[in-house]
Image 1: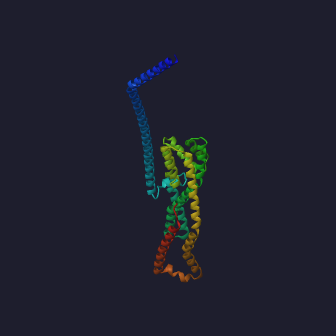
Image 2 (image 1 turned 90 degrees about the horizontal axis):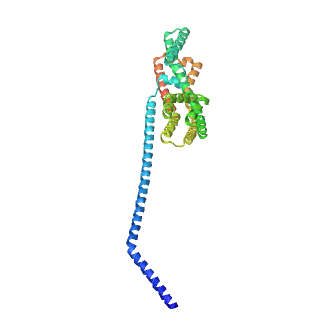
Image 3 (image 1 turned 120 degrees about the vertical axis):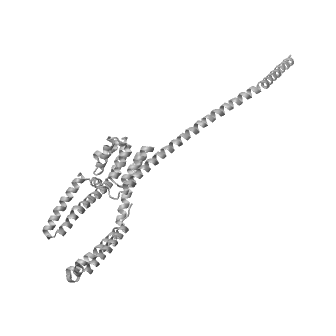
Length: 336
């Protein structure tokens, strides 16, 4: 009985195995086709995903290239404007008066110059009684001296601006890091800053109120303050407006660069002070010797002023002295 059951179970097992093998053989081709189809679907999906990634990467690259080209075009335009301003070695008198911080018009300046020159010429005529001397004094004090005053005030205002500008940038950096937008940071400098930075930033705010964007308003700062530091500031604002980025970090780097430039200028001035003192002594030595000779032996030196040959010698000496002073000046002056 036990042997019969074993044989039956064996027959059933073999039959099931044969049926399974027959079914697998029949369905193998269909299973393989389904597997291949599934693999093809996976490859197609993977290819679509890779194509999407490639398209997204290409779009990002195109966007970066467009942004870079836009920044380069903006910087090129700004550089051309600055070169055009630099080509004007002597800006108009209206701009010079504004850069000096004076609130007068060109007409008022010329009127004041004429009145001052006329007064000084009249005093010279009363003192010496010579119309030629009076005319010379009138020209010097009516045309030369007022322009010298404008130049002096202009350079002094430039130095004050360079001294205070890094501090204003530091305030802007702290304001931006605390969450204030750039417009509010500039308004803060315009209301609480030190002169002449406060006045220049007020003009930036006024330019924005007139409809100019931030980069255009800041680029006008270089027109009013033709300094490389103001140009750097306009370039930083333009780049940030075109390409974005961390403005506080950029302004902080600019402030550090400006302070380093100031330190370098001070170091160069200290190192060249000996050469400047030597040049001043050499330039003043002929006049000092001539004065001493005149005080001790006036008849010995007066021939230079009474004889035509002395006039020729004085003229040639003045020319050569001027050339020497200009050469020494170019040797000891450095641009940073």
